Image (tube, rainbow, N blue to C red; front, side):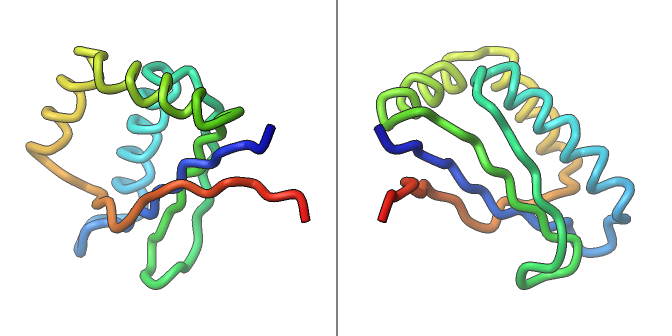
Length: 104
């Protein structure tokens, strides 16, 4: 069964230091791992903007992706943490989607 990769591209807000952006990203990834139970990888570098990050969330299948998404959106701690972070944002979500690993 092909793996499904949830992909999120994030950038630091203008005038946000790299250290502040990384600290916020670390919090977010920790919470995402706890809420989804999925494997999460982070890539950093230059991808259209300085201080760009790509988060890769590995799911074993479309069904697993759906279960993880439902788990995240039902998690009241996730909802509260997200609301709190929005009061003082450090990173912004630029785009997201899913990729399916193909065996060609």
